[in-house]
Image 1 (tube, one colour):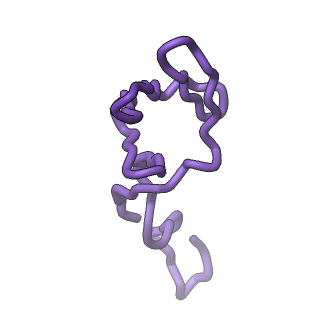
Image 2 (spheres, helix red, strand yellow):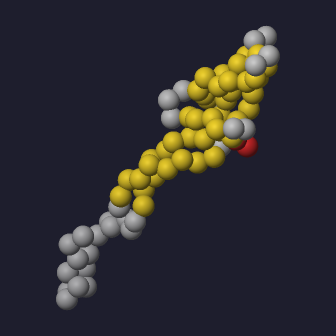
Length: 81
């Protein structure tokens, strides 16, 4: 089993709550940052591990890859693990 860094798109799971100068952003009731709006355009202030590119929001996560070896010292001749 190997740990691997991966970026997943979470745009569809992000919920925004409007404020006067910014929109608070949440994923599953967890605050992840703000979207600031101005005449020059919108900008994002996101927690570490979250990124905005264009109109998409991404989360950096660590996932496991490979096989999950639960049994390592099997005695195949006697039929036990």
